Length: 264
Image (cartoon, rainbow, N blue to C red; front, side):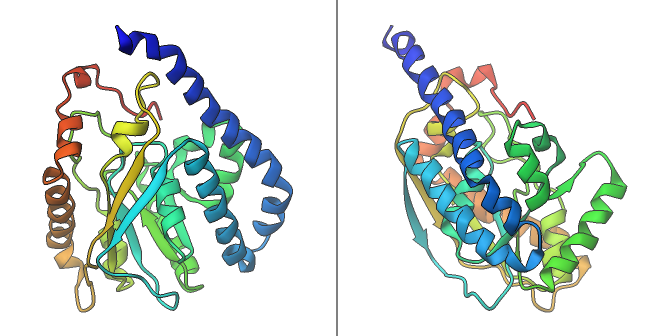
């Protein structure tokens, strides 16, 4: 009964997220247009994106609690990966990284109003169904890595249904990390599914716990090691998630039979 009484409150809270996102994008748009006009401004653009991420996360009543087994340095490029269960996942990654990250993201997100316009300018987009598109990603990424940027990829390639612990990984993050000898920075998000999933009538403010695991080194690896590297990263993330009681309780929640997932 209480759950149904909370539906209107949760609906308003969810609507507030989109109001907050669109309002802040419109407010920042003149500055963002300038910063995206030339790649040399990307460092400044990244600082603005980090500030925006904190506004969205804390503006929704969330907090971040991060544990770092190893920290990055600003003079090196990394491959950032994380599990994907919430619309807020990219903003969590942005907020926690001082290293400017270039995201490889889904082409479908361009459909989002207002946000989509800036998304296509700041993200290397991939059409997962088009092999030619995946090849072009490599070409664009190489150019930006030469500028000292890091790469961010959600290797599941989608937002899995809520009863899935961790979806199988795609190859892109691991091929790139081997080709450019980038350490893999694994971040584990334990609470985003529970607090802000794609179920519009579920969730609440709370603390996002994040663990940044010890880096997986790729120096001296060749493309023949890709599958073993992918398995190593998957097992690391999977074990972290399965050992977290709250994450597993949420994953095995009875109403997960509704199978809410990203509409994009």
